[in-house]
Picture (tube, rainbow, N blue to C red):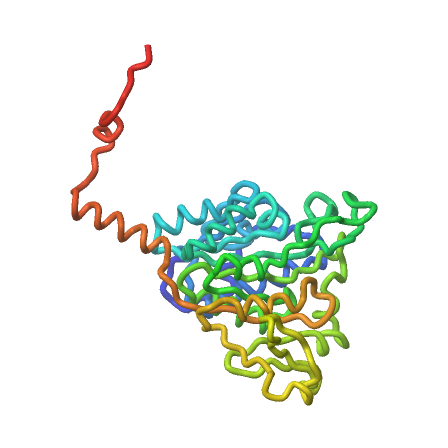
Length: 338
């Protein structure tokens, strides 16, 4: 791990471990983007830590020449929360997947986001359990036929962006594994954000769920289906911006030809404090098989949980002095068990 003060490069964030994902996996593209971005934003390897759970995505810390913790299934946000509270000098990243983060880890993810812990959480969504060889996941579309659902999944899928907005995460975004420019912009915003930054990344599993995101990734389709969210700009899309997102009277959003939309076209504002507009945007596509928003849905300032905890501790010390653990354990109502 480098500790010099000179200008860093991607090489300074790249470990000497052999990268072992399936050839063609979207994780390679995400890894390369993160390794390239960190020196650009001024991150330091000795001040950076990646925490992961279980799954294909969770091998990520091995390939970063930073500190890393390969923790247990679904608990990466809990481990990272403790780290963020105790070590404010570190940039703490969480890498998880749709299975690890939304199934067994859903509770931990939700509470880290609602508390606004100073974490950057990357959720690789491939709509499948890849590590265990192709079972349906919490984001698999309704009716998905896989090894564990030969007659089709009966579960309605989770929309990760909707979930994050529903618990009022302060930074919520979505990008695509192979779109390095867009992904870099979204991750740069996450790095600069104070509080919980949640980024869903559509990540292709070419072995067990190949082509799940063809509508927003493949040439000839993405031009028609990517709804790119740009701060302060009307939300229009298509090769000639021929379609537009409009607000409906019931609070939902829909898509109309731009020439028919008139002044109903929604102007994107990720800094809007109330999350309802961003939530309505996230509901335009329950699965990315048609027009789908990508970009930053929400970016607002709120008090940061770990900073508030440290302030409480400092206040308690100021008011009461340093605590005595022995007195605490032996004080109050105690019993001797014989």
